[in-house]
Image (cartoon, helix red, strand yellow):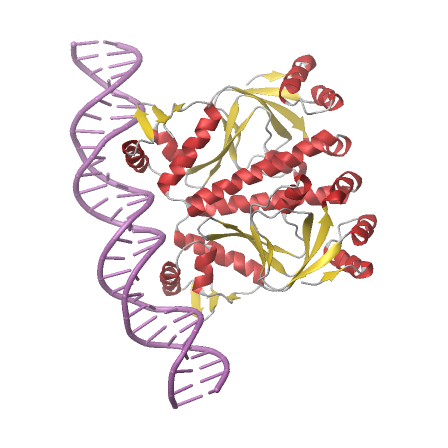
Length: 217
Length: 217
DNA sequence: TCTGCTGTGTAACATTTGTCACAAACCCGC
DNA sequence: GCGGGTTTGTGACAAATGTTACACAGCAGA
């Protein structure tokens, strides 16, 4: 929950994860932005919240999900070091409300870029402008994949898709997940997930253990 | 399918639908871009196609949808005069492949902006840069609503959501739709849609006729 | 070791959605 | 008014997903 304002430290974190930025831009950001720490499970954004700054993730990882009025959740994608939240950029620019939720899934750090700076960065630094476009593009494409998965696929295919995403995130085939977590992320129920995972195990696609699922495909 | 290159005509269409652009920008666009005509039902984009230009819709309306490998379709949102395809902007910038399909739902015209021009427009014209950001923001939000509708809602709620969108498009409560069209757009089957529409009629939410659905809510 | 909590397995049943089959209603051109 | 195509209505059934209820396994702390 702490905040780092020490320029040299901010600069160092930027250099290591945003190497594509020109040195001037990095200095500029180090000068005007602060780093905020988040604990595991802490929320970075809630729906309805107004943005006063854009967030660039410089450490850890964050899950982006949607909530409905009845407390249902639906996981969309992860952000890691070097990523930015597309929505926080747009909403920040226009001082609009967040439509999504974001939660740190491990201790994480985010660079907070004040709205006031956005115009100047956008017009003055080509690497920033490219970064913003690239951020939109990749988030948009991820969202399209998510739409695909729920519009066209059945539950067991969606679980497969989900597990692959988790593998990408954790760089391991052994995933520390409970069935309930998966059910929550997919806005389904634990029994359904258990049932389908069991079938996948029988087909030799996964191995199930308490709190772990090992991907075999 | 025709192409208009006549500058004064291009300029006029731009002025009437993109009034927020500064005059210089409009002249610039009129000078370097052409207008392409599309017939009703003609496809503007297909998945896998490479973009050589970004499209701004200057007349008519266009539906943006996703296709899966088995020919399934899933409608996402409409573009009308004054809108731009977010993906064509990003993909155009990076010369990437389209991930979506777009089809004119009535005779339409689109301004084709060559990729080569994008950088110059982005850095040289503030109203363009704002337009691009606003385009991303609104498409992204529309897509989030779509995700909501399939992640959290049941079929009858989704039909309601769909009909409301159609009403917004046609500015009328009497929608010229067949059940089959709705089923295709929602990647469902005609019988399911008929059944649920019938129930909605019994609840007094709609009135059904051949090729028309009248919204009563 | 006992105890209690959390996570998993599973059966039985409800509900929703999809599929198949076919009839009836409507519309258009002849 | 008569076909023939298209659109809609509907029943019966299949499959997928959600719900309820409960048993039991594994782990951690008393």
